Image: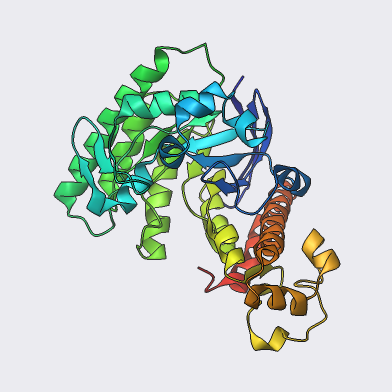
Length: 374
């Protein structure tokens, strides 16, 4: 049932308008996927996500494996039923979490041995185990186990890491094929290669040799300079086939979206909009609004006069600032509604610009608005 439909390409850049067909629904691309790490997008109901236009969400294999456990989720009908979300779910492999827990893990050919941040217990995450976990969750799009090295590693380390990720991918594909046809989910490949041009190209070429339904680009936005991110992204996308969706992992600012879409990326995820909402930072069409600032103490206006979200239709900046400093739970809820509504609306406007051959103009108009937003 999985199929990518390339609808249009921008004549002056690599921007693409597309559509992903899955057994659980259609996804218009470019698309932003809100992150539901623990089986929930923090502080938001699934009905609210649907009302805002969400077509797919991301959940985290690593965290759900540790708590409540993938076997429990399987026995309760799978992740869709467990979290009351019937549209597509993409699950990552846990590779990035392993990278972020470097002091607690040991990477070998077999897989990754690590200590749980939940209870200190020891676990072994192998390529085969990652596929088994995601199958138990009922993922619509699965990710293979990969190593995500930090940006400052030596070439020798990056080369070994790239080869290890490719060997792990081969094992993931073999495990996936054991029950191919019995499940609805598909497996993507992940391009790594660090920040070395030839390794990036090599990783992309050998990854697409597996002829998978889609491809992810990993190991970027891990602390490197933006120019390096875009350079590695351009190399990766130049190799990836045009008839498969391309997913840039963990990137989520409007400026980054524009730069990545211009290079041919179709899918994005990031915790930034929801995390920043909880910290009082709101995205608006007029730029970044930090609701905690004193200037909004008695401001009767909505966060954005051009926004149609529930929060902006009903509440003032003064009220949002009050909730934030009162540490009320409602602060996170209303701010998150606003930021996610903005992200979905931004993507709708971006897709419309590609459709109407205005992508360059659209990118130029909004690029400076969000400079400095991290």
